Amino acid sequence: MATNTERRSAAPDVQGLLNKVPEVTVWFWVIKILCTTVGESFADWINMTLGVGLIDTSLIFTAVLAAVLGWQLRTRRYVPFVYWLTVVVLSVTGTLYTDILTDSRGVPLALSSSVFAVALAVVFGIWYARERTLSIHSIVTRPRELFYWLAVLVTFALGTATGDWTLELTGWTPGVSVLLPLGLIAAIVLGRRLGGGAVLSFWLAYILTRPLGANLGDWLASPGADGGLGLGTAVTSVVFLAAILATVLHLTRSRADVIESHGGTRTASASDPARERIMLGYYAVVAVATAALLVWAHQQPHAAVAGEEGDAAGAASAPLTPDQATSSFPPAEVAKFRTITADTLAKLNSGDQAGATARITDLEKAWDDDQPTLQPTNQQAWTLLDGEIDQALKALRASKPDKAAEVKALNTLLTSLG
Image (cartoon, rainbow, N blue to C red; front, side):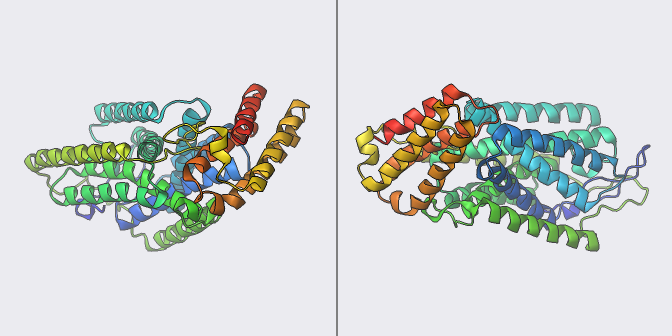
């Protein structure tokens, strides 16, 4: 959502800073969505595919964020590479913080979404009380820059939580889930063109690009049986990182998104307070319509999202007995899964944590290899077992494994496998 009509020139403050953020053009939104997609796929790749673990991955990226943000703060002007590197790292870090609450601490997504929404409101409230503006076109002092980056971090965490909560409520496939944030962003663009407030419209769209990018990443990375394109998290991350780099190089050379400073005061197009108030009503109607859509989707028969939200029961609409969970699948395949799970448990009970972690990887690979044939056979049973396998993987790959939790997850899976 470009706001080219609001171009301005900002004078350096007493610290000699020029505006530290880019102009809001189409390029801004393109690269922002690319960054949020990387935040989802890259975090999943390191955490799950490489088996680093959620806590360790979060610690690594917190340290990286501190270094990158320090670099950004030391710059005296907008530098595309440094700025967008900071956004990418914030995207990954914000995603991980939400995942810690959901997967490691068991915080319901509805609660974490509410907490992050309140946190963002507090950040905006303090920012506005101190600076009297929330416009990103006035980031010319150190306090404003710090408020800006804190708000960006919270928007990533909020976008992650609300996006995952939406999937949990609706059971939509990755491809379908892209449509909701895309449609809402289109509604905000329309609202802005009809006279909606520039600052409000910007931040609403900024929050929504997070679930849009995350759902896009899931759609590209998820297997075809899940409604995705099957590229995998590694390929998706590489493709989008390359696209980000190419876009940043273009912006560095063209300076198409640089807010020039000529030593004058900030100028902006005149706003119409009456029209902005009318458009507040429009945004309220969009919000109510969205809530109604989610309620309707939640009431439709569907399998809830398993694994990512930590639903150990697998999200079936009704509980399954062990016989029901495996009767639809080839006995030889079920026996293979059961053997690997039993081997993992035996290694764990003998004190061989490393061996158990390595053996559970064999189960992950075997299950993923068989997904295209098993899932269409019985979606409900597949969802149940997939959720329980995810729980076992998370328990064994935790940065500080809890043996009781590991044994419980493996025994639960063995029971379901008969």
